Image (tube, rainbow, N blue to C red; front, side):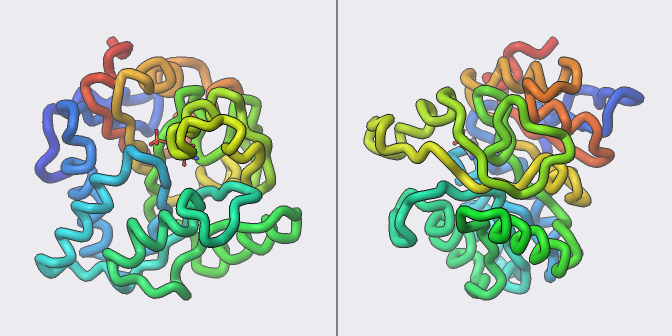
Length: 254
Ligand code: GLP
């Protein structure tokens, strides 16, 4: 990776995970190298995108690269998850987030932006079918929940799970209440999410973690046993994962 800050030694022989520890505030600035390299090599790459606060600086940095000549508009975007029950024009809707924050600044037209939606098994199956039809995800950007979730795969999620409707953990709803004016009752109780198995099908994975609030989850994910209790620990089974985490998020790592 170019331009990366000091990296800890890869946990060679144990997992396919490479951890890159960066100063606080630098996650997006370092992650953009990884994504820009993929896009420069493969302008038609399928980029899996996470929502949430952590990747915002990455997306902004990618848009700045575009203004300096990086071709981003031929990519296809695939989102991880979506709330169930918000109106399509609700600003907290993840489809709105993906369009406003990623697709529009990168010049990607609507017909190449795929966000899961709906409430039925058929909706979930159609989304899976769509990913298969585009040849799979080349690079999946992930965040991590305080409880170790990836996408909306909450503790208890099966390693082989596919896109489906899930109920949201109390920890997740409390964390996300900040986007609903602090009103927990306004946070949806259900979501549609790619499954763990769907996520692990991506060719490469880039997990971003920032802040003290993620330290325990990151420690469990990287150094704990692979367990349904910490869905991010399933990443230890993937052959090509890069984790970019700031000092605060690395606080509980040795
Ligand atoms: C959210 C989303 C995830 C996101 C994660 C972390 O609830 N479902 O896709 O990666 O939790 O969010 P943040 O980066 O805001 O901490």
